[in-house]
Image 1 (cartoon, rainbow over the protein chains, first blue to last red):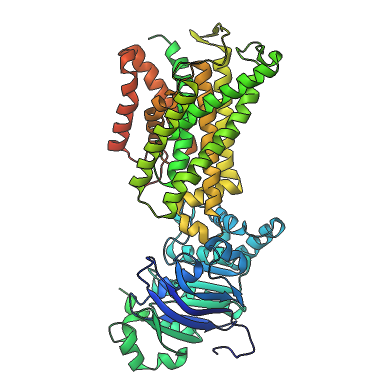
Image 2 (image 1 turned 90 degrees about the vertical axis):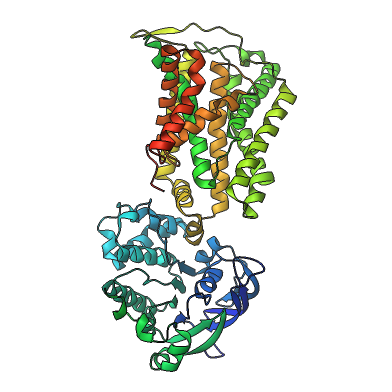
Length: 256
Length: 303
C-alpha cells in the first residue's frame, strides 16, 4: 500500500517542519509518502499537529524546513493559490465555502484557474455529480445545510480534477447520517482514482474507508499501518487516539 | 425650506459617495480603515490640474471651454491621466508602506496609524509642491440653469451627477458580474480560503487599491471643479467618507453610494435648518448613530 519504489508518490513530505511562528514548530520532522490512489487517514490526539500538517502542505501555514513534492515536483514554496492549478486541492475544516457568494459563484470562482473554454463544462460535470447543488445554483452558499456546505466545499476542490485532495475533518459538526454520506462521497472520489488524504477525529468511520492510517503525536509520526489492522488494535487506540476508547470517537458516540 | 437643498445635497452626496466606495472597498478587503484615502482625492485633483495645465500650454484650443461646460478638452484628457497616476500613487504607497506591514503580520492598529502618517506626508507633499493657495481648473463663470421645482444647477454639476451615476453602475457591475469582482468579494469574506480556491490575493489587493484610488481621483476632480482645489480638499471630506462607508455597510458599493447621498442631503438640510456652521457635525452625528444603533450599516453583513 505504501507505494512501491517504482512509482512516484502522489505526495511526499521529507523532514517537514512547519508552524505559525518561526520559533515554534508544530509539525516536527514528518516523513510521509502517499502512493497514487491511496485513501490515507491522519489520526492523532488533539494538538498533535494534524491540521497544521495539512495546512502546511496546502500553503496556508509556513513551512520552516523540509520539502513537499507533488507527483515528483517540488511544491514546498509554491504559494497557496497556485497549488490548486498544479493538482493539489485542499478542503479546510471550517469556513470552507464563501457564504456571501451563491453556489454557482463559489464554483465559478474556483473554475477561474482553468482555461476559459473548460470552465462551463467542468461546472456542469460537478452539478451532475452533486445534483443537490444544481437544484438552486443561485442560492447563497451561506443558506446551505452543513452537509450541503461540505458537498459544495468538496465540489469546489474537485473543479480542476485534481490528482490529490486533502480534507481537514470533513465530518466535523455533521450529524451521523450526513457523516456517512460524506464518507461515502470520499470513497467514490477515491474509487475514481483520486488520492485522498483525510484528517479525522471520527476514528472508527475513517478507518473503515481508509486504506492506510498514520498516527501523529506531538508533530511526529508515531505509527503507520493498514487501516484495517489499526481498527482492531486496542493498544493503538488507547495510546494515541485520545481518552483511551476508540468508541469515544465513533460515529455512534456523537448521537445525542 | 428652499428646495435647492436637494440639488446641493445630491451634488455633495455624489462626491462623498464616490469617495466612500473607495473607502468601503479598501476597508472590506484590506481590513483596516485607511485614513490616507482622503489624500487620494486631493492628489487626484492636483494631478489633474497639473496635467491639464501642461496640456493647456501645449495647445490653447484644449483650454477653450466645451459649451455648455466651464472647461476645455484639457480637463477630461487630464482626468484620464490623473486617474492612472492616482492609481499608481496608491500602489506605490502600498508597496512602500502597507504591503510591508501586511507581510509582517502587523496588527490593524499599526496599519491605521501608518495610514495617518501616510496622510500627513501626502498632504504636506501637496502643500510643498502646489502651496496651500486655492486653485481652480478654470476661471470661466457658469450660470446655473433652472430645472423646475425651484431647483437650479450648473451644467458642470449636472455632468458630475451623470458621471457619478455611470461610475457607480460600472463598479456595481464589475463587483457582481465579473471574475475579478467575484474574487474581490471572496477575498473580502475569507482571504485564506480565497487563496486555497486559487485566487491570487495579492493581485486582488492591487486591483482594489487601483479602483479605490481611481474613484477617489474622480471625486477629487469633481470637488475641485465644483468647489475649489486645496491640499485639504480630501482631508476635510474624510469624516463624511467614513460616515457614508459605515452607514452603507462595509463592503457594499450600492450602500456606500446611497449612504453618500444620505450624508450629502443631511448636510445640505442641516445648513438650511440649523445653520451652515453645523454642517461638519452632521457626518459625526450620523456616524455615532449608526455605530450605536446598527453597526453593520444599511447593507453590511452581520459580523
